[in-house]
Image 1 (tube, rainbow, N blue to C red):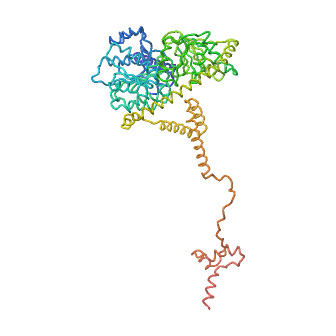
Image 2 (image 1 turned 90 degrees about the vertical axis):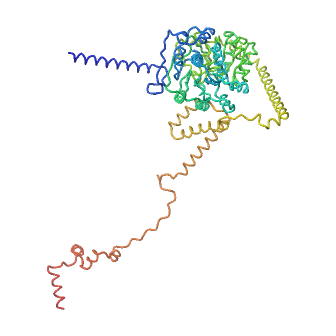
Image 3 (image 1 turned 180 degrees about the vertical axis):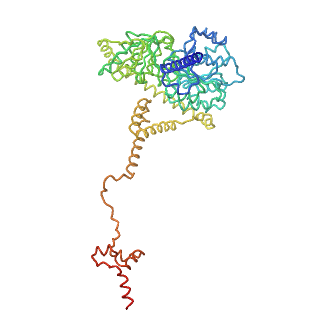
Length: 628
């Protein structure tokens, strides 16, 4: 009986273990992120589950930080903060993924500041480096860091493009505790500021890592990671987790903790999504529809996203001529102009901000009520980031997107993944016609403004050239001494261009080797960011040269003879075959000689009809020979 009971308990234990394994497998399969699976072996542990009742007071943060948190008005930590801050305080490497607008900045800055306050520096050195993809995001992270460190002695520095280089160099020489930088400007300082280095960096933070990889910062990031200390803590944060980000994590992180708080492809929970359908022959209605929406329905705290800088500038002029308070934010503006546009929008001096995707990632602009998409972005991921500018931190918001025939597939994907109902908005045709007429009347004014701006740019360029020439004449001797040496870079523009073309040609070379590879190449080319017209033309020339070389090589290769050649080669003179009689005469082997001496054989005599020898014939011949 005791043995049977033992066997039954063992069976139950085995069944419990198998159930536990099944539960684990089901959790992995239900996870939103399919790239990271149990078999990847990249992550040391998973800390996605967090204590929901955790508050800032329960996190063992020092008093200066708790005072700053209270001053900023933070009441309860967000899910990403509840999951990340305890792990970050333990000094472990983190790979975190959470939806946009969930408080990722405070999630990585608070553990870092706690470390700096707990263990003050002995010498003026940079101990924390935060890498960000855009200047605006860098400015925002710097602002949050300063606010959280206001009651401590921690010093911060910002190194991004568009701001004065000399001022940044002076700040870096003083050795700030925390440095927030964009990859390009940081490498500039590393190569041109001799006293600045990264060997003392204790914590490296990669914010919006997927965006940095999208912006071709991969080489720069690898260079920076190499220069940092090996005994560092690294935190990688991203709104979306792709294969490229996974590769970067494997290179930069040691035994990382995986923290995926919520789905990275979900929009904010309190966002109302609306779509306006553009009919096939009505693509020209986009400007009229947007103008009608902004004039009649959404009059303040609106962000309008366009696909190109040119379209953003045109909409800025058009809406301005209609009497709306509008600003613009895109890559053609200087850094000062971009910051001024953001400041005016935040201070409610302007009601509408027309922007490209430069403002679609990471920027936390308080009070954005509506996001309008002039055209749908390239991917669903970019759509999530655009509409993520509103309905942030538990607030409500609305997005209105104009969808053409070519963009309907993306709309289906968005509707499929939406947690709440997606609404269709219809504008009366007479309203659209009215605003089309208004825009047509303003075309002359738009053209006049563009001409005026072009003239102003030309004037500024000529003035800058004159000032440069004057300066060279005045300080020519000093410049030759080496005061204004050209700044070095770890890759020149030509080298970067060559590298980009070489990669593209390598992919094309692989694509020529088979149908499957060619199909994959075509799919990848559609996904990747488009080349500039100059690079595209150069790529096409090199591609055609490569194709021609392959063709020539194929023609030179000896082909298999499937049919007779057109001209038969000259016949090799054959050796004349000798007759049987000649062969017999020239045959001097022992066997042949013996045969001829003995006379024809029995078979030969029979065949030739010769008289047969009688028995004893040999003896008679011998006796005759004797008598003679």
